Length: 244
Ligand SMILES: Nc1nc2c(c(=O)[nH]1)N[C@H]1C(S)=C(S)[C@@H](COP(=O)(O)O)O[C@H]1N2
Ligand SMILES: [Mo]
Image 1 (cartoon, rainbow, N blue to C red):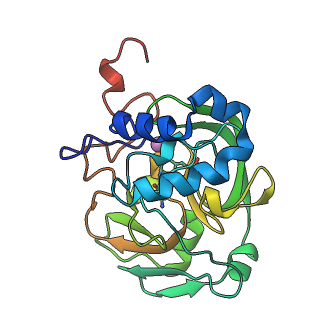
Image 2 (cartoon, rainbow, N blue to C red):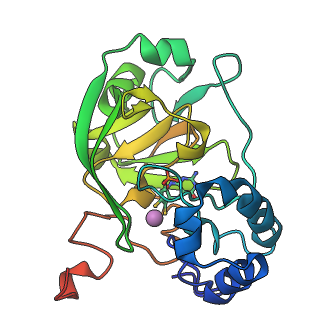
């Protein structure tokens, strides 16, 4: 949890904000689920609140197909074939930048796993598809002494990290597709990190930078108390949780 605000990746830390917003709109969570057409108006209202509490309210928003929408910023620019770039730099021999077409031209891997947010919601058997992160790391030529990878996002705020061993796993992808369709903006498109064996906060949306580093630098939520090694069922206190 964020020690200053108590907010977490589920928005649990902002119960007052949630109740306030729902109260303003005269809605409960059930009404929202039953009336997805309200989402646009709700997002507009939440945007105003999110300016004051960027972490606390977004997990409330449905994002279709069992997902919930998360963003630590209240707005995120849109990127497409014209202006999207993914840079790879740091402790590598060949730093560079990929366009979407470059990423699409590389071998694609499709994984079907359960998506699991650290606070309990789950989306079973969800296909993600993209380029193995290890492919990009190999192409860049990771230097001796490198230990970790840092990820940055074009929302300008979020970040993530993995050890180099974790980053080289075959179930860690730089994804371009969700459920066999191009990854939409609300899910972090056009390109999102997908760390299948870990809680979903590791899967950074709106991925724009991959930097090879000499040590793990904790990501956005990890600076706020969540585990860097976020294995599903084995982290964030789950080891001690008899109900997990
Ligand atoms: N850039 C960015 N990536 C992010 C987040 C975020 O706020 N910003 N939230 C994380 C969390 S806590 C979750 S549960 C998932 C939510 O993904 P979704 O919006 O596609 O459901 O994105 C993860 N990646
Ligand atoms: Mo999350």
